[in-house]
Image (tube, rainbow, N blue to C red; front, side, top):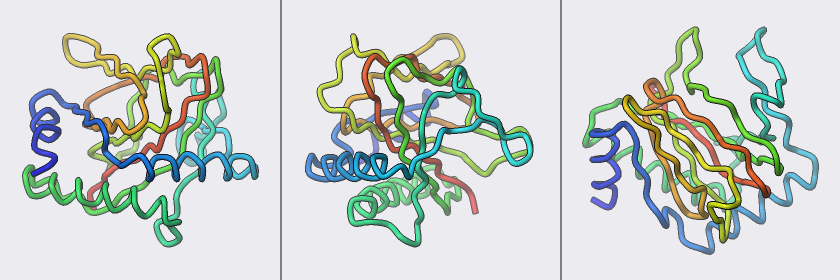
Length: 195
């Protein structure tokens, strides 16, 4: 199973990562698509909260997002969606999680922006079980900032948002933050959910 190590780490530590989740052409196509869609002004500032409690607080959450429509996936999005679906099936087979749905959006942080420590589960309940972040940033260095910081039980783990790296973690258990980036930071962020 190509995801055995990733799933083993998720079970043992609550998170895991894998490099080269997608091939270079697929990553390039996703980056190009994101650039084009954002230049068209289709992305929106991300809010915090849900429904009537939604609010913009760029000092807390500074990304602009564009949600993917599963019924109208472009070819680059379909490649990504298919790879995530393979992972979903592997997780269900190995862990019996009952994952049935996936939702995702493009996310982009301008230089100087980040996302304060938070969880991925809404207070009024959520079907999100596994958070998935695929990075689209070529040639990213630690000096560029924008690290993903995971808050584990006894320590923190910082992950470099390098192109092709997929990070997964338990949505209901692990709080995390995006440290301030020094250059534009791009990703596809999504959640595997129960039915």
